[in-house]
Length: 83
Image (cartoon, rainbow, N blue to C red; front, top):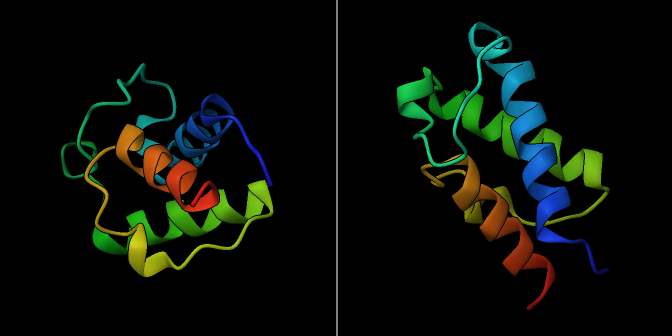
């Protein structure tokens, strides 16, 4: 399945704002670290899982949960779909 990286990035950002409700009204950079946004490891796993579900794709969460930024998570999902 071919999904554009930009669509993946939008979904990661949207799910980040849902899970991290404190940042929902903030403009955030996709290069900000999840830790700096207040995300725990559980939050990052939920963001990754919710993004995969919204895109209707299956990739091992183990490959994704240590992604430090929104952009990196989108890149890893994109790479996982295209390998």
